Length: 407
Image (cartoon, rainbow, N blue to C red; front, side, top):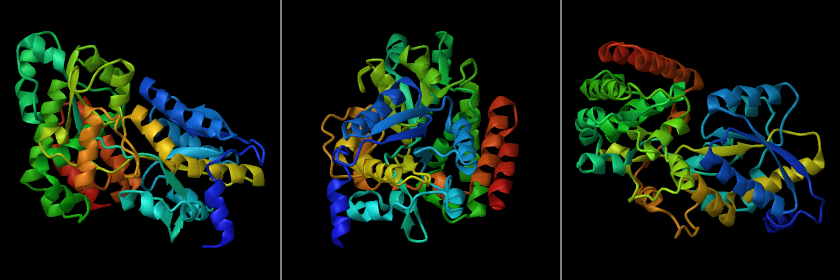
């Protein structure tokens, strides 16, 4: 390793006051209570290093924010750093030469040795060069339950999806909504994705999503997935909220029995003062197949015609992966860290479940890494139609197979 690279490693995450503080606008879509608390940890760490985080939060989901981010970058008004999910969302921007190459930062800070699983860094790597800094592992395959709803009914808290469905009539009779679900398109698509691995099982999930086996996709195992989605659709009637965190709040306030949502829901429970295992229960893999997809968030750094800002971008990239930042951020976010050498003794019961699955290797790639954005959008549109209408599960299944067959 060259001396200059060693010096970069030593100086990347220490005070920037020796070279002058630099402001960087950072865009993201983390605006809920739990998300805001988590992103504040990143801003605090960057400001403490001597630079200045200029927050560019964009309200709404990633589907709302990403087009704005991309338009700014391609339109000549780039920010200093921007959030995307792991996968192919920034591929065209990288190929167009609009993103900063972070390979020197990654090599100086041994990212290949400390980032786990390696698929996270692979998702940042194009033609052997590294273009993003992963910050967390987020998995969407969780069922969140209000313990009080079941205590009031005199029923045991469900331990899996099948028990949850079986309890729905009693929940409905008590004036509660069985399943909280917001009306944003990605939420119904997330629920369908969670059901794929939970109901069909990991081997069948891999056959379809990794091997592109359309016989399995069209078979009985996935017919069962669509039957489960039809059940969920009926359970969500009366939810009547828009945003995902509003749906989470229905569970927190015991107005709904449960929600299918990613592990970022933990941040909302924490902000509300809820205690994992006491006030709420979390079931990875919906309690049926406890596997986690290793999706999540990463930061990309658009090219800027400013040497000082480029240096600050690289300092921020290194800081995001640093152990202290990883701990502070992920404890608030409810996500898992992207390195296994950090102290997470303060993790709650739900986070510990995720850490145990990660340590055991019970993980799989996320859909963002396996399907093109176009395919994902078509599936999302189908899921919106399915959840908002009475489209028969058999018809939706057939149309879904047709979409992914043409990936």
